[in-house]
Image 1 (cartoon, rainbow, N blue to C red):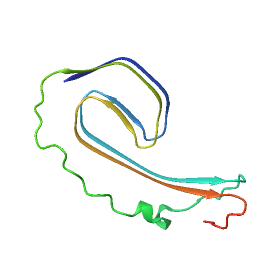
Image 2: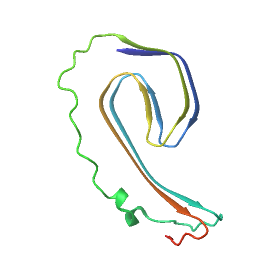
Image 3: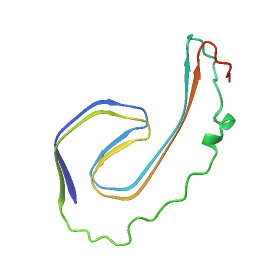
Image 4: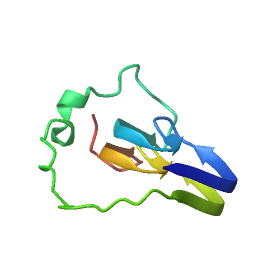
Length: 120
């Protein structure tokens, strides 16, 4: 199997984003992010360890079996033109075939503004 893209324009890619053109056996992407936003620019060295937040230790949902049978004909994946504003954390732009795909993205947003008593 082959993949062809006539024109590809991507404005921005975030860390841990993948651009894959062609066939792959396995795509495995994982992002763990703590995003801290404050009214005043004051940051400690280590804002918070991942272990402080349940979202990062909760086991992922079990995988789902979606396809029982596939009749794959030799062909060419063709994309004429593709324009993307951006790819975010743990995202994949993939043109081609994949045998296995696993994507995990866990983000904890923390916002501290004047009058907010929730602190780390």
